[in-house]
Image (cartoon, rainbow, N blue to C red; front, side, top):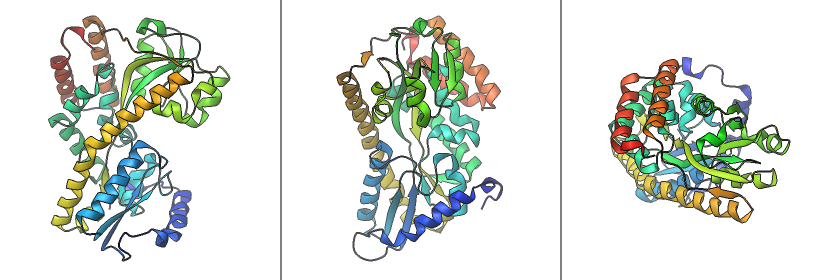
Length: 353
């Protein structure tokens, strides 16, 4: 166990685990017998979230693939640990598997900031997948495994892209963002991105967002269609959406080394195969949920602008230059960053965004 990585876990987290553990015998096993191995999976989103729904499919298929010798118990809404504390929880044995947001891993490995760098602004999902699922992604996640002392079960899940949502100003180009006070979730890259566009980004947690918007403390919000729908933000004053594809939201499946090392090799292969079987389906589900959310936003009076201007060569170069500077400031691995930039340049020639 990496003792250094577990310092600072709160007494509240331990008590929360104890409370959940008291209820643990109520977990229903599919064939009325206790499994040989039970994987405790923790996420901090609610049961209707895309990430949780994907894990429910994983749970079902895992039982089928192992004849219920290995089963999973999903603890939603941060019952055992939130994304920020998941690595500590894995090390302490509070959970076996976590699927945290990739951005939350940047405190352990700055390379987790890769897909939030400004150079990815405006790129589509197929471009991100080319990098994420290829050699560059493999190197990124190997480094993350080494830094967190965990094992990654396979490819990442995702929620799609963040966009820009405004209250009073209709945004139809990057130039329209000048002077806007924009809420960002907390990424340093998002702060730098909107500063480049002449805006005034500030960090506000989602729990405080509705009040901030309704009171006029911010003019715009960086989030996703699905997240905006979950908070019914049209009731707080959101009126417009600019589908800019500003930042990619990925989730990484981490299992504790203690749990992984205790498994037979045949069981490891089954778990990995089951995980692989859900990835593409989950990504498709996320796209469908975002489209459904988009339709609901429109039904509730939000005007969506999707005719996004292609990024000019000069704009893309500006985003790349700022990405290189930011990556160095964050302590990222520069060969990894430049390799990703080269792939982007090959896929998106002549300023096409």
